[in-house]
Length: 322
Ligand code: PBG
Ligand code: ZN
Image 1: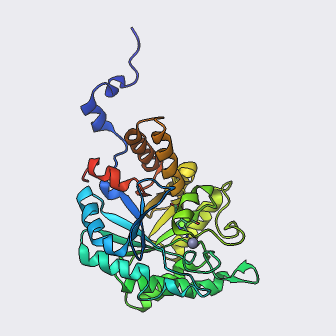
Image 2: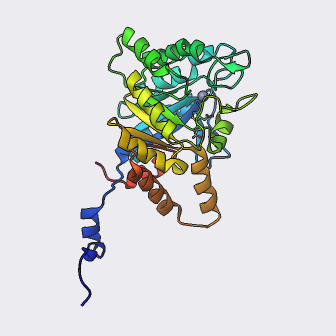
């Protein structure tokens, strides 16, 4: 007889598989990124199924999202124009600030998270201010703090700085605390890699740097230990949730970060990762729904507690409530 040293039968029955599943996706794990702008909504060619949402259409979107089971959104603004001082980013009447008010009026069932960065709002297209051809890290910090504060004053529940400047979490924490917003959490894009997978996003926001690239402030894809240093530094500065971005080429980083910290870990399943799955399923390569589920489960299995994904709207309704 074959020696039964392992519980092989656990695989054979659906109910048992559910009992012993190590990973379970819930709709509450997912954050849906949205792009907001003035004027009419427009589809994003490189991200089939995603839109630049006109502010006028946001009340309808909010209702649809809640009905689809989406519980959180991550808001990116596409301003009508940029400026050398990035002022459209902290304008109390800016596109994100107005979108926040509109969404807040439309529903109280959506958690509103805002991306804090300068790249869509500044003439150079870089995430920080530029001086003498270089990113001026320290001069950028007060500007980011102003942006975060203006988001919170317009109704943001959580701010998420994505610029990768050193010291930004502390600068934002101090500004929020100083204005009585101690309760507002910060999600830090702590390990954000200089990735080619952001292509469709930059197309959607028209936010590619006009000159150069982001390699001087985003992380080198070859480094994983550096991610741990970044994450620990941001936690020390006051980050409540730390993010690894992108997700799929960095599952090892998610896993290592998970082991190194005791705060929630978030992963960003970015635009290029979305576009790849959409393109392959449009070619009939595979069953999109099954691949999306397997992909998100792999990110969660690697250690992410929260996943930002453009698939959230499609899949939320099919997931566990808890
Ligand atoms: C920039 C920013 C980027 C993304 C979110 N915020 C990319 C970049 O560095 O240009 C990418 C998101 C995605 O690809 O889905 N602050
Ligand atoms: Zn940026």
